[in-house]
Image (cartoon, rainbow, N blue to C red; front, side, top):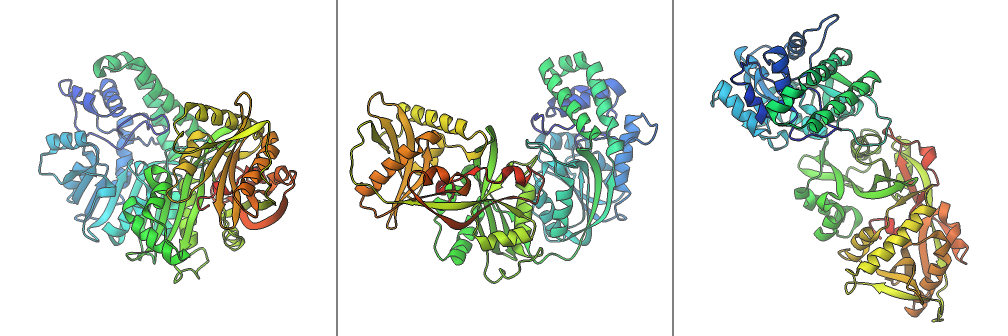
Length: 604
């Protein structure tokens, strides 16, 4: 672990050291990454030696930490096939288990991304040992190079799709993937948690062709390790600060994190488990996170599916710089399905949260007919929801704009639940009639850096957000408007401020899109009471631009604000789904709460 994160810090990581350390070498712990340096030195001060730095598994009435730690390692060793089989140990720490495996006659290769640990392993075991400073994500070897891949408290730091895909590539058929680690056992609170959810891990393993051979719940045996660690860091606080040149605040944060873990173990939200998987016959399709270098594959599939091209600049605008997430399905070397999402800051009943808009959902026509829970759409959609949306995930909510047919498929498979429909409102444009009390101010490249504009839009957004405290709404501040509309790689939008003619108070913001079909209010930002004024100005702009119609799209539950201005409403065959697959807010609390307009769609 390279840094401290209260949501990720673990009381004992996968790094260990089986050497009996005397006082002359204890200072070497100082160079380990925090908090490993704390754990190693605390154990040395308390026990006089450090054999391991992973969780201990305490049997009934047992209080000896070293024996508990050895019991944990023995659980793994007892599940290995007889030597000399080939083992890849992922997360070798300081080489304890690695060294034991060599002594038992196994052919072992070890990897860790920590160069300091590699240096210490070379110092202890010699420079000829087969270890590499490398992440599993970057590790390459010939197909079927190993009989076993071993994760001892390292799997929690690695994307599960990487774990199982590397297993498919590297393990022989019938070979084993062994994990002993912490997991989240359930999620019922807002806020991202670092631990993998155990049920998601098991489901993904099955999708990617692994059979669960054994599952041991070790939570009760592991929990006393937290008690021990809190006691020893408290008892050795001054020595730890002096010897490791640490301040009290760092130790207090670490202890606070460990107390939080204690609570989560006690209430059953966190736990500890051993998982033994066996590789079956490789699956028909492979699920992977879509990386930037695979964007050309996505663009080719997009053109084949929708009949028109998405440019690389459009892909970058959607997914680049961490804005988007995507899961792909491969058949051999061919991308045959894609499920994407673009992150969006929202207000969730007045509170800031993160959501993701689902888009670019597509399946190769040759594979599209398989609409069961074994088909590519279900595989990627379920995996995306498990990985990204709900309690403890990067995004609390997901939303999108599927047509009714796609919505019914996802509902039938238990993935989505409907929360709203979109409606379209239409008005006749107005003649060029003066508005004596208000005027228009266009925002474009000539004034995009004007501080007054940013301040005025911020005020409009604050007023709108206050009116929508009982709703779900995407943030519409100046940064969003600029990036969404003024920085779009292809579409041209007209951003207009409606301002008092005297005093320059901004009453609201209109975002308009002019096409051959007419003028569309793509977005607006204002207090809800100002909607009639903004509609009037939009109708005037449409008339001055020679359009025959003005329209906007809005979720049905807020359509009345627009119909009241003289508009004509019609329902659209576009649904707003919510995640029904992974644990998250109840669908009933979200129903008819979204404020969404056509500007919230990535394709308008």
